[in-house]
Image (cartoon, rainbow, N blue to C red; front, side, top):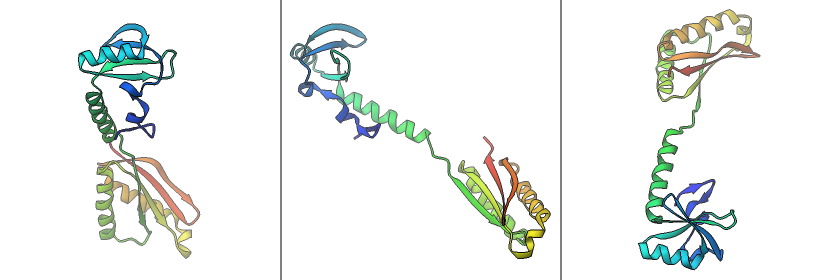
Length: 176
């Protein structure tokens, strides 16, 4: 069942005998036929082998359309699936470093960061300062710069390295 606005479409649209209103405004294709009773609308729909679907229940009188409801649901499912596929939530991934992180470890973390960026995730790089390292903020900036140089072909800096207490953060975005 398809969900739109957290209510399934099948529950929102009334079809055929489920239409409660005594009078309706009938639409066939793109032509407005006019106002008539629900029974007359149902009769017209049955003659064509189609369904009478209430498309605008809040208007006065409710607007009903003659269509193949099964085909409509199928097309709606396809459209929703395509829309959901196109709308991927971007995640924020975090890579933690230290000013003592060695070159090989940096390369391994850069390889993992490259995977995150290839998957269109935002990357947050964090350096944690411990004890006396707090006095060496310049080493943290140098480490961030070195790490970014490993990734500059796949990332852009959204937020430059910024010091906040015992940590320094930098945010990278994937190149579009």
